[in-house]
Length: 187
Image 1 (cartoon, rainbow, N blue to C red):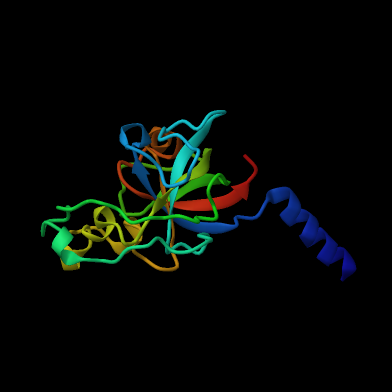
Image 2 (tube, rainbow, N blue to C red; image 1 turned 135 degrees about the vertical axis):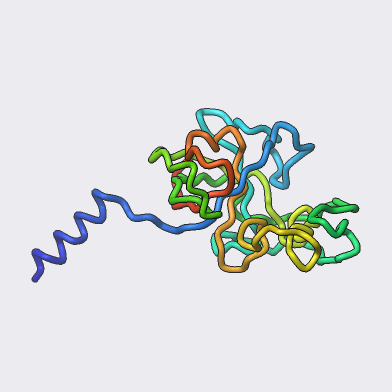
């Protein structure tokens, strides 16, 4: 019995354990005016082969206070976009500067024309994906959009990562959002 328990423990140490799962959307940080985490550049490339990422403030991996702000339908244009696209303050995000290994686990949309590459990318959290930002909540059907809540940082309990667009083709050949496996790693 002790041998079996020790073998099982050793096997999980060798194979590695997937810490979490979630959804990846993609964002061009090079074209963005800034990021929520102080001291980090608004750049897809964070150096040493590490890509930029934002973590959703409803994600179980999020630490610190939720981003300040509220949902206001008058900020939405009725077809999935926003009119007043000013975002909330996201001070105190506890994952700023932390790195994660991300691997594709399949299409988030049921897309069949692509596949996962089997490769992982390392991302660094440099931004937030706030549920109270009009760029996110205006995509929901109740505001005229057509994006599922888990794909726009609007679903509680879903680890939502908005990853640099330059990492998308490394992870998969899917055109759209993907399901991911997530593991905390050192930077």
